[in-house]
Image (cartoon, rainbow, N blue to C red; front, side, top):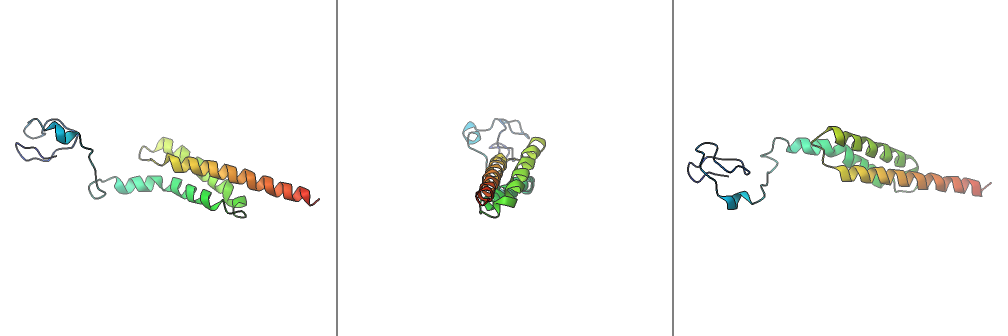
Length: 125
């Protein structure tokens, strides 16, 4: 936000100008500050921090294919669990939803596929 008195650039959430200490207008502070990818030095790192959860989610979706679920279900479960634990250590991590979805998808697909295979094997005996 630009200061009306000295025309200096200030952060969006400050109440006084950092240069001349003039009071900044309150109507401009209430607007939500949007930061583009070119302005934020952490924008590329945020996407990088969330990649394990997004990959785990994609593996979980791919595990829903019947034969692939036998092997990709446990992989999605493991990757989702690992992404969930990573979220506790990294403050830039914001993809808890895809990590939980991968965890649940992996677990449910694994259980249903392996129970189905077990029942088919027992039915043929």
